[in-house]
Image (cartoon, rainbow, N blue to C red; front, side):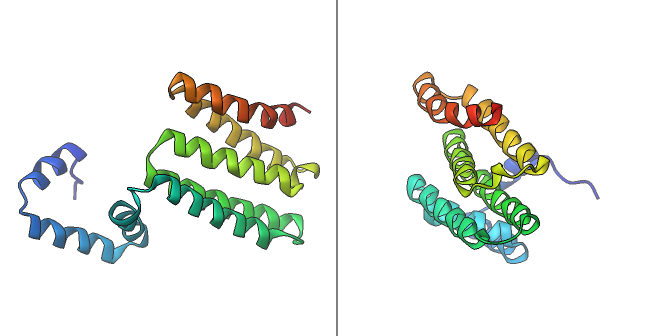
Length: 162
């Protein structure tokens, strides 16, 4: 069975009556947790993006707190989980400034946790990959935002070089 393209779906959805559209959305949300989370974001939280970003940062903080005192292997697993959570919310928001802000926050928390002091190639590669994503996302922003975010990223990049 062939899946329809986004363009085809968009044309078809434009012709669907509002009540049937609502039923389709509810049916989508019923079968997949991510669909339900995205619909929740779009309906209830999209109008307060900064509040949502702060809530995601709080979730990330909780993840870093749970990681305290665990061994390096568990810390790596926990970091990947925190990063998956951040990336999921970045997809929901769909905004480059929000992506940059959350990834910078993740990197700052990683530095603050002290895990980068370990001679772990995995941790250093994870950190470097996130910095690469941040730099790539910054390029697509407005000049004023680029300047502000570059100032935040510079200390993180310096840490990578040392």
